Image (cartoon, rainbow, N blue to C red; front, side, top):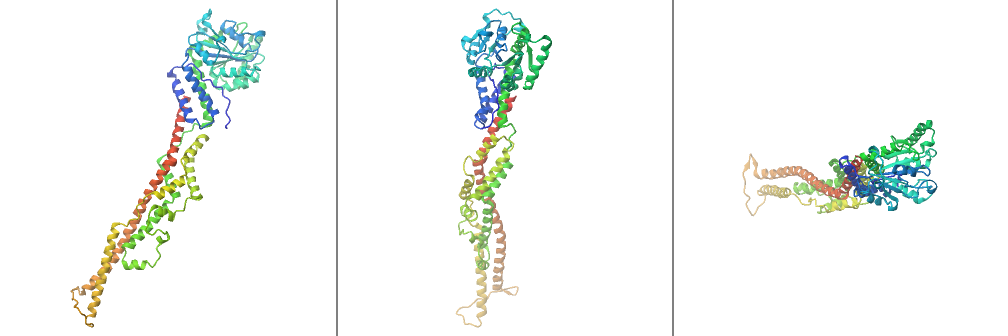
Length: 553
């Protein structure tokens, strides 16, 4: 399982206007999560899945409130600051409450806040509405719409307090880290909380409380040191304020800052965008974001050609071309030449085909059975094609595409079955060859008849024949029988030579036709076994990447 960086995500925010890209980014995040689910470890995807789920829930609740959480260590004066902001003694302090053991909530404006607080899991006994009290705030410090949380102390020894704080931090639109002059450099709060929240600097505010305990001339130095520490944690451009919850120093400035964020809804918007970006970055680090390679027609054709080589198509077409030429010549050549030719061994006899010139017979004759070598060569071709398409992608998607390429069965066996089941229609002798065959026999009969006639005429003066042999005219001083006999012999040889040319063309044509038919069958296997599954997976990656880019804004 891959290592997952610690990310504190908080998708629960008041929705900003749709024109700000809120809907588009959430929709992109949902598409990204759906497409990549099952491709990466569940722990990697968990922040993004939780984000989409909680945003959907928050959309049903109040969009008029901004959730601000006060977080800090024991003794930082966090509860005193909570009381100062609410102008009420709500959070116990001092001896009566040495640590904040539960979260308190104060809502300015009760409409919709009850459901929001219930959604966050804040018990009713830990809630209070600010509207029932006398509000002395001016317009620029009005906190109408604020839900202020006083979180459990992060350094509490109670595990339940840590769990509660971690849970509620995820619901907050804005985080206010309350530090005190003596422990503001404490590694616990920096390592466990502030540094992992670096992506949320736009919705983070740092308050150095108990500033009255710092000599006046040292206050600027102390604030600068706090700013330096949080910048080292990765939180750049974070505002650092010095306040005194007990004396009231800086409280009005803090209220103005909170009021400004509430009025502009900047806290909710910024936190949402930061949450989305953090979730997307977590997934992108594992699943990648590179553009996907395109399965072009050229890549597809090259892949089919290489599979054809593995399946033995060139050997079969060569056998078809050679055997077709020999069979055609045997039927169309001068009969005497054919008889002499039969004394030589016919190469097609080496194939053991007899009269069966089917694809299966040819495949059996010239292509070996599917074995380790053929299977390995086929797998190599598939792997090379897949690797070429996925080399720019992250490991999860490379694995997914490789799995898709071999998910539907044994490619080598499927190719072998396709080759043997394909009807290539090469067994039949061409019609013209049959006609030439008949002509050749007629010419041979003519030559034999002319020869017999000439022999009888020569024997007639010496032998008493029981019949008369007619005397035919001469042609140019040459007896007609000689003209006919020689003419038939010459015509037979010429027709035989011409037939060799047509036999060569016929062999090439049948080989081309068989090659096209076999490659069509191989192309179908390639589509069903490899290309279509790979295209589906690439389509899922494209959907994932489009969603990722949309979620990034």
